[in-house]
Length: 159
Image (cartoon, rainbow, N blue to C red; front, side):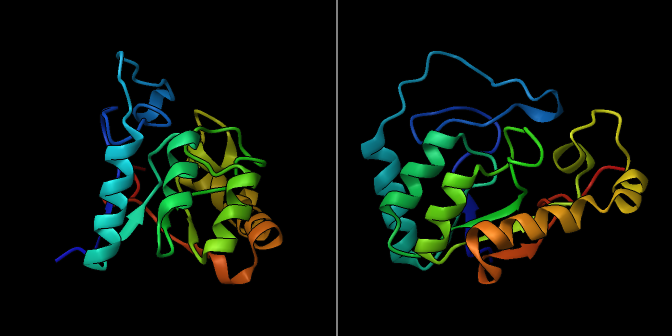
């Protein structure tokens, strides 16, 4: 049984907003009235149940709100450093700093588009380009060694 879940995966809702939609990096925007009260109560209930809150698919406002209310460390199960690759999936430095204060972790993804900034990038490009190590080092410098790991997505990586 899974002991963690993502606040958002496919659609915006009252729980939070997505950072992107699939590989197109386009936000899926319908008029959604995000309810901070609802999303905060979900985070607190996940804390009570001993579940980790996964923020890999959420927008920056949703990630900051969740980290601000969570009583337990959060996880980005497959994200990278926004400062190195301007992808909405990646975590900006100010969120990495907040993550460090709360004890959370970023699991750096091997997904080419999110670490090399190239839509046509392949896993071979990633291996040759040392992108993963650059993202790991950046997260380590900003958040600390205790807050960085290696991760894929729930469904692995499409090659």
